[in-house]
Length: 514
Image (tube, rainbow, N blue to C red):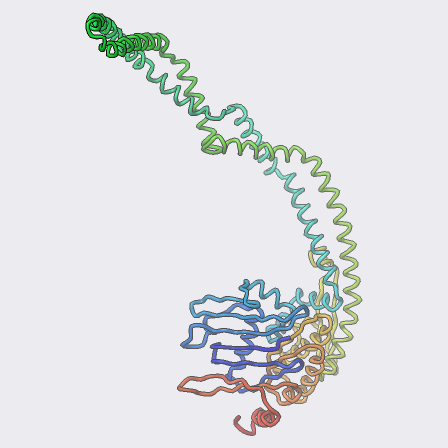
């Protein structure tokens, strides 16, 4: 139920606060007065997309707020529209997405307008109406879930059997064989690069080590001779001993260094065969890097992925058997459930035909016929049934599909008759009608008003009308007027007292300018 609606800077409405009654709320006003702003505000609260043009001229922001009672709790909903194009949604001051708002409001608010009459001709909408009347939502949701599960199983089975999958497995096996064949060890590439450098410069290193060894071998004899001279001097001055010691040590270390360089030069040899082998190994590892990842860790990760993929495919025979059995079970269960749904639809269709036809008579269409044709089709996510509403408003004419036979006024009454029939089933807390009485006469308008009043006993109804006969049925009546203030047109929305209602009725009848 929509208790309160606050509008600020939306279209022509500068500021308004509307307190709706629990039953039939009527909104009236001259064409162009701003009634559409109220409906736009309700649409926005219901999750409709915002347009920049909705923001009042010379304003940067429009704000719509609403207090809504749902079966679970009371919510405070707010929409903020910015001229920049940005829009924000809030529920109890917590920001939410537009989709979340729309989902939450789906069972609370429903706006019925001329577009709703057009939607009524769509098979999907007709099936939804029938399913709602028969209270099939739980069974339909279960069927859709199981039907989707069967579809996924069939796709999976097809995937296992497809040539692309077989080829992909062959490629995966080839890639894994390559990784295992090369068998790249951790840090091996670093060691190979170092060895490659040594092999490439072997001759240069041999020469430099040999020459350095020869040069060092010339130094120790000179140091020995120097040590002998200083030993003789040390006998005269013992303090020289500490100078002689490092000279002798240096001679020993240089002899060792010379021998090491000579040994190094003897060991190192150019090895073209080994160089070729190292270069080939480096090339193999670089190939792995290019194909599977730039590091040893990445190649190992790819190896594990390939192993899992191949293992998964290797168990395909068992998987295929499982899927075939699962599909067989789901197919049988889905067909049984679809047939059960179909039977319930057919029984419910007969009852809905009777109720809607009776409501049409109440709406001054005494000769109207409403039928629901159900034909069997191939199984789909909606079941086995192709559903079509057939309607005729005049005597002697066979019922035809809705989009082929009904005038605007007749279609509006058919839509209202269906909404009345669904009132208890839909469990919506608020229905909003935008000129549901368009294209009907005065006598029919009186009947429409009474039917709206009857509907409003169980569901809050908000209705925009141009008919006095409908307006007089309201428990709460709002007048919408356009005024000029400081050179700008603004919309005034006012809850009418009994006296002001009479004045509004007079204006609506064209007896005075209101």
